[in-house]
Image 1 (cartoon, rainbow, N blue to C red):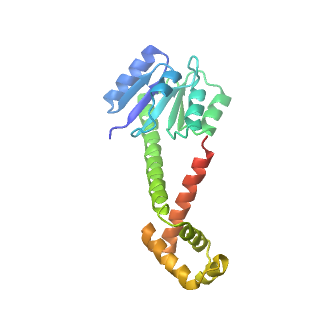
Image 2 (cartoon, helix red, strand yellow):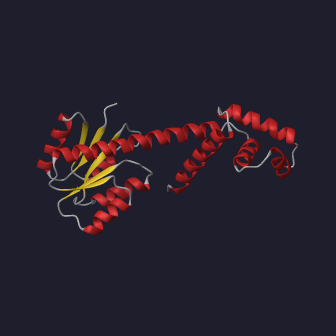
Image 3 (cartoon, helix red, strand yellow):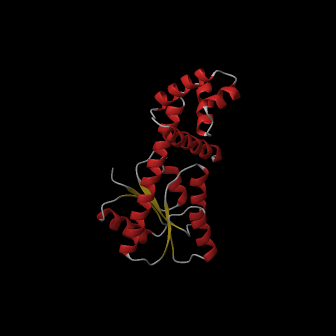
Length: 210
C-alpha cells in the first residue's frame, strides 16, 4: 500500500507546493489547513503514513494536535515544520515523540530523507503492534489456570515448584505445560517467554490509554 502523508499547514501556497512535490515523489497526500480539520478527518484504522505538521497553526497548535493523537493512543510519526520555533517548543515536540523537526526553509532532499525515516518508524511500529495483537489472541486461548502456569514457567519455576504454589500435582502441571505450548504455537520456553512479554507490553500500553 502506498504511504499517505498527512500534510497540515495553514499557508495555502506552502501547502499546495508541498502537496504537489510529495505527490510527484510517489506519495499519497491528504492536506489540511488546520489541526482541527485533520483530527476530524483522520481515521485511526489507516494504512502506512506519517504527519507533516506545521508547529504554528491558528487555533489548535501543532503541539496540541500531537497531544490529541497521543491521548487517543494513535502512534503516527510526526514531522514538525516551523520557521519560528523556540527551543522549548522544539524540545517539547521531540520529548513527546515527534519523529523529527524541520526548520523552514528546508531542502527537498532533506524532507524526503526525514519522511523516509518516519515511514520506516511507522512500519516497525505497525509490525510490532500486529505481533502484539497476534500474541494477545493466542494467549486468550488459554484457560485461567494455564495462564497462571505459563506465568510461573516464564518466571523460572519448575513443575514441582508450580505444583506446590498452585496446590496441584506435578503431573497436572506437565499436562498444562504441554497444552500451553500447543495452544500458543511455541516450541520452547524462550518462545513462550517472548510471547508472554509481548502480551504484557500490549496490556501495559492499553492501560496507559484514557
